[in-house]
Length: 127
Image (cartoon, rainbow, N blue to C red; front, side):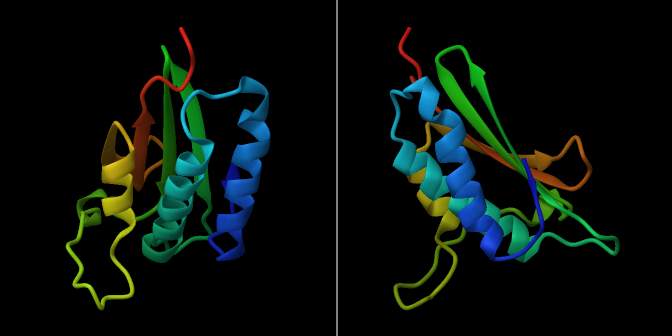
C-alpha cells in the first residue's frame, strides 16, 4: 500500500493491515504487528526526505511460516539506528520496540530508492 507522508497515514496503515490480514487468521499477534507498523510508518514520515513529492510504501509477505513487513521511504539508509533514550525522553523508542517484539529486523537501501526498514514475525502461519 502507498500513503502520503502525513500523520493520519499511520492510522490508515494500521486499519488496512488489520483488514487485509484478517482472512489469514495469523498465529502471531496482529496487535504486535500493528504496533510495529505504526512505529515504522511514523519513522518513515518523520525521517523520509525528498525534493520531489513522495509516498510511504508498506508491504507484507509470507515467507514460509513467517511474516515479513517492509516500510519504504526516500530517506537515507545510513540514518536508521536504534537509539537508547533516557527515561524522560519523549521519542526514540520505535526501533527498540521492534527489536524486542520481532524475530528480527533490518534496515537498508529500498528497491524504490531511499530506505526500507523491515521486520519478521516467525511462525505467523501454522504449518
